[in-house]
Amino acid sequence: MNGPQTPEEFCRFLWHQYLEERRYDFLAEVVDPALSVIGTGAHEVSRNVQAFEAAMARESGEWNGTFLIKDQWYQTTALSDGCCLVIGELVVRESTGDGIPYDLHFRFTMVLRKGDGGWKLVHVHQSVPDPNQTQDEFFPHRMVEQTGQQIIYNLRHDSLTGLLNRLYLTETASRLIGNGPQGWLLVLDIDHFKDINDSLGHPFGDKVLISLAQSVKSAFSQAVAGRVGGDEFVVYLPGEMPQAALERLLARFKGDWEESQQALQAGRPITVSIGISQCPRDGADYETLWQRADEALYTAKKGGRNQVCIRRGGE
Image 1 (cartoon, rainbow, N blue to C red):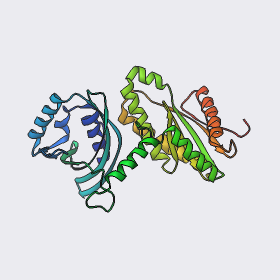
Image 2: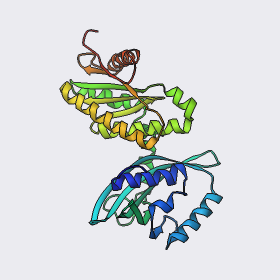
Image 3: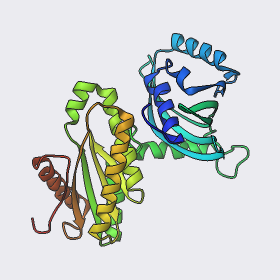
Image 4: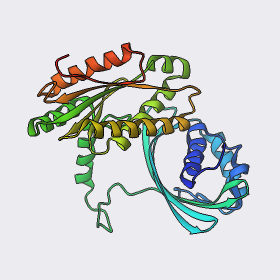
């Protein structure tokens, strides 16, 4: 950890080290002597640092799988001048020896205390939401209904990134284009992604894809976004939008992506090329707009990558 950190950055670092890196040697630097931990299991309670370290030692010896953080959010509330509460949620993919990936969803609260050396972790409480409990239900009673909803969700979304899959993105964007006369279509592609997989490994490549999807969702929150194959993503922004407003969204995406790369710790910049077409100027249907945006993407790649190319009408 270098430099001052916000509470959210500190918690993001802790979860990355604990889940994805499985590093426990740094705990002495970041935990308060009064640490207490309540986990998601029936007996996962550590009343002090010694009990928590013993639990970590058992866990590292009994389990050799991997975790990959797919989605996360944080919210901070100040409790006093030097103390704060951070709440949040994580969606984590667990890979074990059986070769079957499992998606885990849990919530947490963390109490942090500010010292001379930075933030210290005082208390952690994890919980697992009941997937069968809907809004305004004290007791869940819609298990069959929600199982059907989950099946529909899985059919429509990319299993790795949570964005729309190619089929449902095509259907949704086509419907929006048919309903409205204007919009922008963006095609995003990670530069030299094959080299990333070859040099850093496919699990790291998956982390890059998940992180990019999070930046897309954050910057283009009102858009329809999907992963259409490999490292290619498509975003459709329906409605009338001046180019200046589009460029502000692109700047927000660039800033979010640069920040996300700090957590990835790739050791080198990971850049993205973007091609853009406009409806109805460049086409009045999804397939035509995608083709025109893909041509603009090719121009961006040919021009040196790490850039945005907006197709000009008539080209």
